[in-house]
Amino acid sequence: MSRRIKIGKIALRYGFTLIVVGIAFYYLIQEFDIQSAFDTLRRADPLLFAAAMLAFYVSFPLRTERWRWFLSAIDVEAGRLSANLILLVGYYLNTLVPAKLGDIYRSYLAAGRYDDRVSSIAGTIAAERIIDLCLLAVGLVFALPIVLTRRTEFVSRVTTWAVVLLVVVGVGTVALLRFDVIPLPERMNSAVTSFRRGLRAASGRSLGDRVSIMALSVSVWSTNIIRTALVAAALGINLSLAEITLLALLVAFLSGLPWVPAGIGLVEVISTSVLLSLGLSAESALALILLDRTITVVTLVLLGTPIYVLVLHFDQSKLSGTVVADEKTQ
Image (cartoon, rainbow, N blue to C red; front, side, top):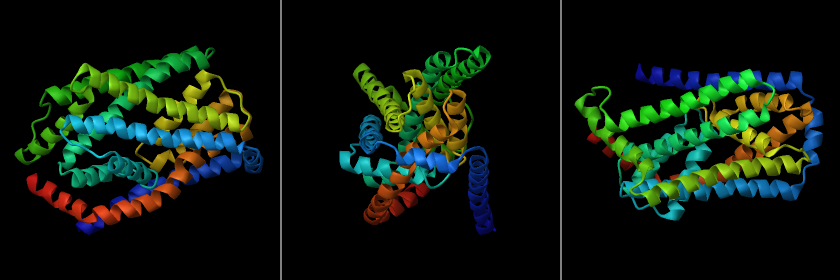
């Protein structure tokens, strides 16, 4: 019976993904001249495209350094190379499977490699996401009013929701860290305590830690903005800094939604619609998004596949041991 339930969950998860992708593909076929978009893509400057791809992959060492700060806060000394590979595998899997399963796998893989609890590692990853959400909300608050000067009602609504997001994330995080909000069974207390231990890593051990973590986080988001600017430049598309920032934030937000892997379908439809509202032609809007997704999805899959196979080969025994150990301690 449990096997049937498991198969049903998998079918539902991937079925929803296929439906979203199908609807998005149908919309793009109906609303855009695909051939014109590909003609625009063929005229892209290869050097600027390569620079955009470099900006994307520079973000991974920066993300790794930030993650290593979090891990060191829970007394886990992670090697730079192994942490880079594990983080890259997590992002690779997030482009292939929904529900952020790449983050879960990353937790298990890191726990096996560094001999720590899965829940503690998961807490450090949650800390990453919380900081990124806060920076995303702050970016929207500043970029939207500049880009959409005439649509004051829409800007006001989105800005309000961004502020609400900041407050909810802040209050929720403090509540999770400081209070036992929900009484839990004894067998779950250990896992929750370990998760909180990892989550507290976001606060750092000192003011210097906090400054370093914030500097790395801002640097990560800066690479997203630089990549987007270079992609636009490669296609000869002129966008203001505020418009580029808004697009980079939007793509990052949609890509991070757990419903479909890498936001496939959602990014293409919503981002192109936003670009159309900014005055871009249909073929330019679609070409920009497709070129950006070539970097963030296609090249990541091509590069990530051999790395995933390599990491899985060397870490399979440790991973299995971690799963068993974690189950025993709960």
